[in-house]
Image (cartoon, rainbow, N blue to C red):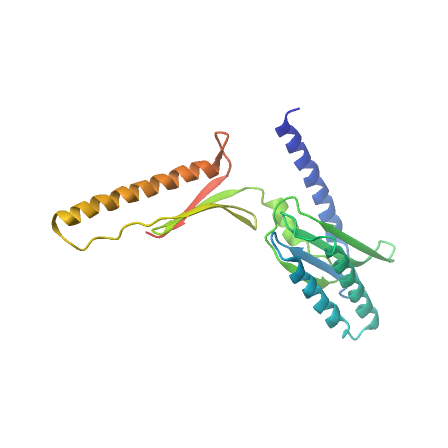
Length: 231
């Protein structure tokens, strides 16, 4: 079996596991607001979310209902423990679900999940509810098509890709194009030729960069291309 076939098979297995997990999380219900959904996008600062959970834990101590107060504080404490397992956010982000759910028999059960999504998740979320919020994860499954985009103006160009709610900058560069010359005669014609030559080189560099980032092994690696900018 080729390496590409193996990679595809592994991706399908991960996709199946994710679908099964999301289905289970969607069906889970609890009493009060003791089910925590926490999502950190890529490159998030772990200390920032650690501090946020500490603040939320302190605020939860003011909940009037003793049962709900203890359940929420326990869920936040579990989320804090899960977050301590990471020194930095994984490349695709981090998802944490903690709380007390009701089983089919009506009994309470504590559950804790922490994992890196199978592709980048560009969502920041913290919610205490009577259910887990998996909308952002479900969206990753529904939007597999990747589109490329080029934003181009007189100062430079930016190349990126977008897939669902995930965006990635692939390349960018700046350019210094000469402005229109106000003088007349031969000087204006000469500056005009120089300006047109630089504009031509700029457009050619944009085209060459587009080939580098949107074509891999002689195959286009995006479903479509979006062009934007100002003249």
